[in-house]
Every structure is written in structure tokens, then in C-alpha cells.
Image 1 (cartoon, one colour):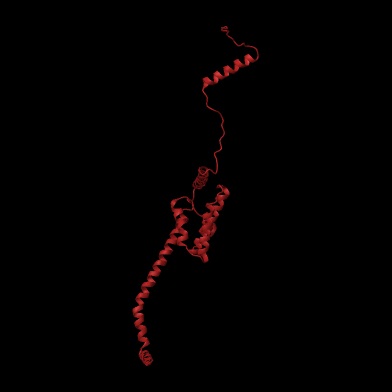
Image 2 (cartoon, one colour):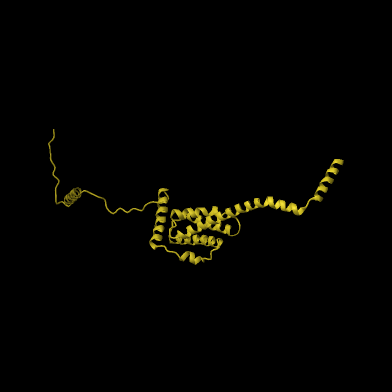
Length: 218
């Protein structure tokens, strides 16, 4: 064990001669650029995520009156990816997103109440995103302050009702109501039927005899 003791003594002696001030300068000189590069990469990644999140919010805001547009659907589907998180406001955003998604999967046919609830759930989600990104919008502002022709809203509602109705029809879950008003008929056929009916009535009432022809017996 003498060699271990000797080696430990040498190491201890070397540490005693180290100038720690100079060593710290060496470490800072060598490690500074590396740390600076890593910090720059982290900032760039953070900036990229922030830009994508703001882009989603801008798209959802701009398409509030066109929720069936491709841009709106793409931005909505990107929410759980770009706002991924299981804590704090990120968790609230993901929960609101899932609630809104589940509402569209309901089997009940859409009506005025369904549309009203859909809008409320959407603005709940939009409000949470705006808060997370640091905007000071109120929920009423998000729901009220935008331009959207009423005809566009009516068109989207009607398209939703028609689409869901067709899906249920093709799936055999519902049927088309039908009421037969009349059958198409040839005019001459109708005249012949009327004449025959008149002849039968006259015969039954004794006003007309049936002509019988006797061909004789063999």
C-alpha cells in the first residue's frame, strides 16, 4: 500500500501548488464559448416555439367567423402539439381543447343548443391561449369584437347539419321521410277506368243488361 500513499501525497502536493484564480480563468476561457453556444441554441428553440404558438393564436383569431376553413382546422389540430404540457395553464389549454373536440363527436344531431355550446367551448379555449401568451383580451372581446357576416355563420351551421345528417343517413341510423301525394297515370287509362266504372254501376242498378250470345248445343 506504500505506492498508494505515495501517489496520494503527490496529488495533494500538486493541488497545493495550483493557482485557483488562474485555473478559473482557464475554465472560463474554454467553457465560455461552449456555454454561449448552448445558450444561443436554447434561445432560438424558445423563440421558435413562441412564434409557432403566436401563429396558431393569430390563425384562430382570424378564422373565428370561418371555423370550417382549412386554416382554422389546421391551427386547431396543432394546439396539443405546440401547447403540450401537463401542468398549469398548458394543462388547462389541453383540457379545454379535448372538451371542444369531444363535443364534435357527440351523436346527437346539431341544433341551436349544440351550436351555442360549441361556440362557448371554443372561446373558452381561445381565452386560455390568449392569457398564456400574455394578451389582455377579455372573453367578451374575443367572442364579440370581430367581423363575420351573418350569412357565413348561417352557412356553416347549415353545412354542419347537412353533413351530420348525411352521415347518419348513409350509416343507416335514420331514414328519409316520404309522403306520396299522387301517382302519375295516363289520361286515356283514367278515361277507360271511368267508363268501365259507369257501365258496372248501370248494370248493378238494372239500367243496363248484359248481352248473352247462345252458340247452341252440339
